[in-house]
Amino acid sequence: MSGRLWYPQLDVYDAIRRMAGLLLFCDPASLPSRERLYIADFYFANPPLLHTTHMTSEVRRQFNALGVPRPEKTFISYPSAPLLFQKMEEVQRQAFRTLVGKGLIDVQSLERGIVKPSDAGTALLDEHFASLFNEEERRIGQFIANSFLRGGEQIDGLRRSTGLRRVGR
Image (cartoon, rainbow, N blue to C red; front, side):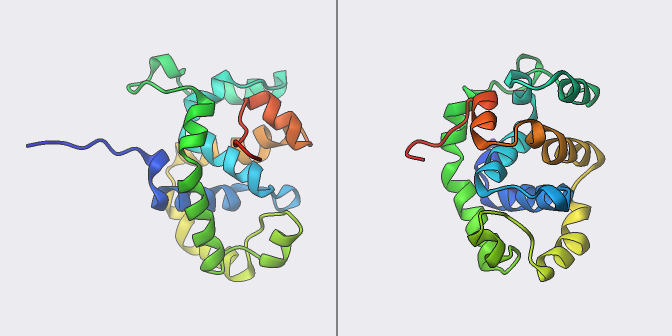
């Protein structure tokens, strides 16, 4: 019998679930841009890599309270964050296109650079996606959406603190 490893970082369906969850957990007053959503999704899929980012002391305190293990203490070994972020690019794009194509993202807000669930999307997220997350995922997702992403208002600050940037962007 041969086994296969499943990498949620490279699964479009899991990326849809994660992005939808981040939008569900996000404070409506501080909705992300597409790039912020991609970075948030990256860390939602790979929470141990949050240890390698720069955070304010208050945000770091909140993160440490979550008890996320350091990358070297986990079962898998992680490549560098920028390399894995590039590898996830096409999966994230497909997931995002699916959310937009299914009408779950408000297109008018997206044209203004803000990723906001549509009215139908909000109802669907509340009704069907909320139950797809266990308590630990909820806490990590809420931290990423509401504390970690808020650390720097400008995208350049988030890029500097994470080291993540897509080539050609």
